[in-house]
Amino acid sequence: MSPSAPRREGEGGFTLLEVMIALAIMAGVVVTLLSSLNFHLDVASSRAGVCLAAIIGRAAVEEAAVTGASLAGEGDFGRAFEGYTWKGTAEKTELKGLVRRSFSVRKDGVEEVRFLFYTFEDAR
Image (cartoon, rainbow, N blue to C red; front, side, top):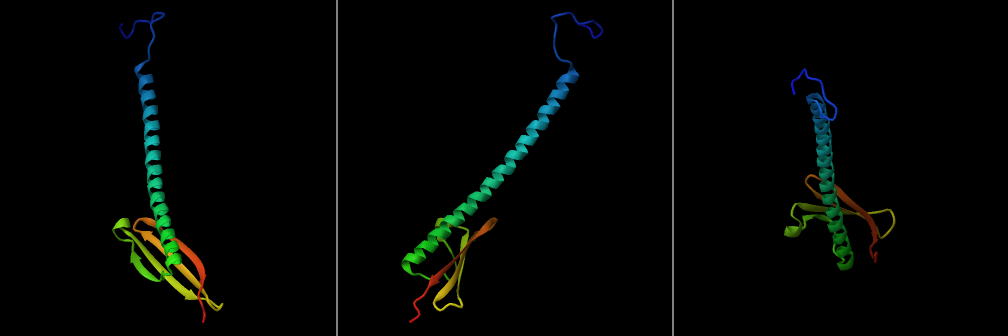
């Protein structure tokens, strides 16, 4: 069919311009979807690190409560959780025997998770 020939009925198709516009729209949608997916994967990865920090911090606090170990100082969790570090403090309060304890877990690139709780010490 020559460019100047009229279309006959039943002979359909898209012009090159229509195809190019459709491809441009599809490319825009694909780029938007991929950037959104990348953003949400990054958020999920970050939240996984915070969740793990909360779990191992909670386990350390519970273990210290059972064993009576002090959480004051700094340290890491060894090879089991490489890169995760902890820091604990203990401060006496105005009330006799009441101690304010703070325990935090962090990893580089991950938000710090903090625990704050109070304990009673035997004031004999």
